[in-house]
Length: 237
Image (cartoon, rainbow, N blue to C red; front, side, top):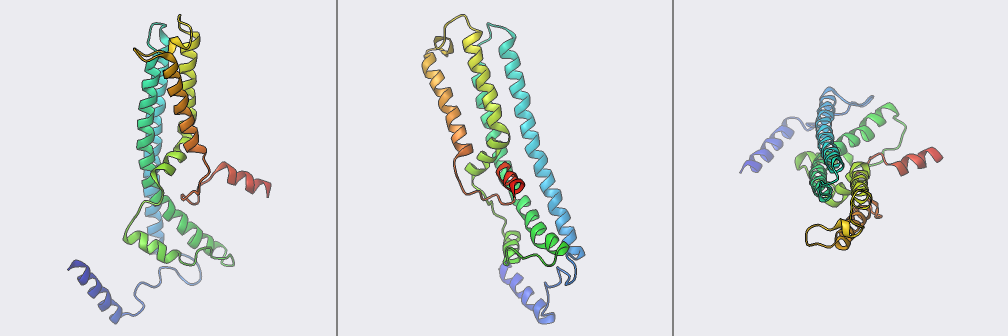
């Protein structure tokens, strides 16, 4: 019923003004005030979600520092606390990946406006890459959707932040069970009834899994991201 009323209102508006909805972009140069305010709002939203990502990263770094400090403070402190720290950092990774998927909604809108409005306004002679960008952006405003998968979001955050953190944590764990324990490795890596060989194998498997997720070949759907490979290719050109 509500949608029918909305459609009727739109038809009434068009009957009064057949050009309703036009004029969001001026003919000569770029955005009208309405689009400028829209762009400012999208920048603000993107900034807020960017700060949320940084906040989660800060929590993970603080936790990692606390775990490593405690693990190496005393030789009698159990090494498996570092493994518990791994589990906690995985939790932060999942939370940050979810936030990144939401952040990508606003970031993709900003990039669309930058590429199709501002770049076009500054250089009217440049080719318009996506001729259907207006329709795509309108659909996204009508019904916002997540544009990347959870696995891709996890891969992004692993590449940027969490893969080095896991390398530091597990490298410190390996140092702890080989150089700071009276028992010979791999027996020193045992956790309760679980043999040290099994624990070591699980840690190695975990690291292989994280590297595989971060580095496996894929088609990236988060468009417009700054990646090291793209920057190197641009520098070579």
